[in-house]
Length: 489
Image (cartoon, rainbow, N blue to C red):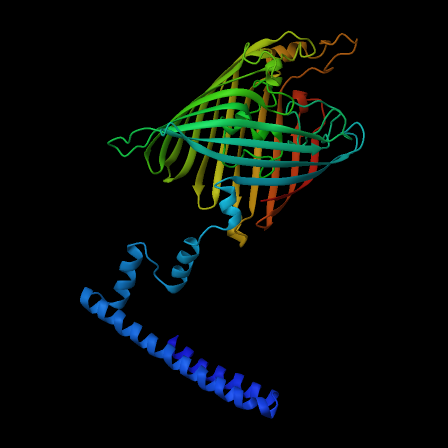
């Protein structure tokens, strides 16, 4: 490489000088010749410095008893750059923050806009068989000063806006919606904007254990999306990034089934306490318990009268196949649950249940997930929910940031719902609320491909099928074709 530089320099100099001499008038050529002499002196000086640097490096290697290659390895082992490119990267990392970064003072900001277009077969929707909607999210996290020098705290704000109701079907389903990004007021022509989340979090690290563990305590209070802290899943947890159908985004019993008792936008006031024990680098346990306002309390009414309570024990590590995985077990109880047979009245019931959420990498670029939920009590439309699927990374076909996802769902209607759905008229309007006799389980399938156009834009075609919608074996299956575009930073 050095030989190439020694050859290239005089050639480059000669080319520049020749070009200048030929293009300049005669009275300016003497100045060019002076410039050439100065340039030659500078080049000689650079070569002398490079030679001196090489002699100095050789002397250092001789005194340390290491060969040049070994010295490079030793430097890398000490954390230093192993090559000039790495040295430049290290210099870039050590640069001073910009004025904007200094002004923000550690504040992190993120935003995204998701637009979804879906189309169903003729006769499956009451009006238009296609639907377009958008949703915008803006999040800000603000670190705060230490609390009594014993712990850290932060504020989190989340603003959401949107328009469009999403597809509505002639036959009711148990999944709530095949498009979880739909976000609007009562009328599709209205746009909705609200502070979705606003919470404060305090965390305190505890003393290190002999095993190397660094446990910590954490408390969160405010207006919260409970699924940020419970029922998480690495590959099936975001309707703007993975599966669109509500049945795959969260545990259907908690979300579609309404066990959380959140407001119509999915948020509620709450308090969460957590204990995390990091025994090893890849071996983490976390126990959390949360209490949230439910029903009328979700809209800041009698917030903690008959609340929604949930406890979760989670493990993250490489316990299976020596590959990363996450395992979460949780149980819930809600005293302000809106039962299917009285959802039009003010009276509420009680529901309890358990759930599991698992995601596990099984091969390079291939991960699987599953969720299971069971309701022990309550007038629920379905009391068992089972979903599973897989995600394949695109590096296998030369698209490093693309993903392919496939998921299946099974929602088993409850015995109470099967017995009463055909004739139930809870709103007393003379027309049965459901008007059919459920006899089986609703089945769901979703396939998507996420094409990462660049760091800020993702386009994702999506295909869904809902078999036996509402658990009705006589109902025709629903097919939905969709396209999602998400731009964010």
